[in-house]
Length: 134
Image (cartoon, rainbow, N blue to C red; front, side, top):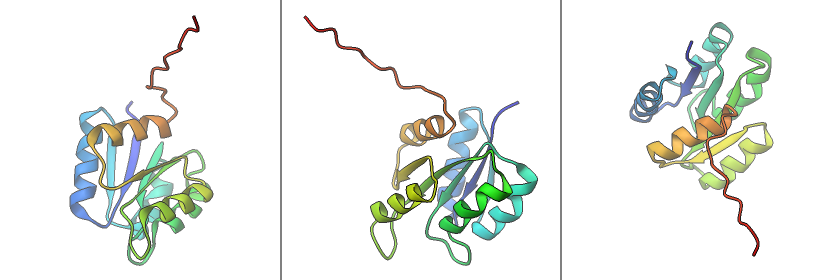
């Protein structure tokens, strides 16, 4: 059975694009149009991973991240942001401090998203080259 990923973003184009990328890579992607819908779905889905934007109306990504541990304790978190009132780096650093395993700046490429997903899920896909000393 493929891993379930909840994709939370109030921007429909971003949400659809990320879901399509994930499905093409063999994951089961479930869209949520914002934090409120994500919180409603978390307990029911019990996803392996939650990808959430930060800046969203009503319920933001930080609240999703904070409630994730109670609603779906085994789920990993990947937080994405393009910024808002402050730059994306501030949002992403805050997300890390709140427990996000991986963060990713918008805009991102397909390769960057899929690598971030694999990293968040603990799938080591980066080959490490060991330099031999002469």
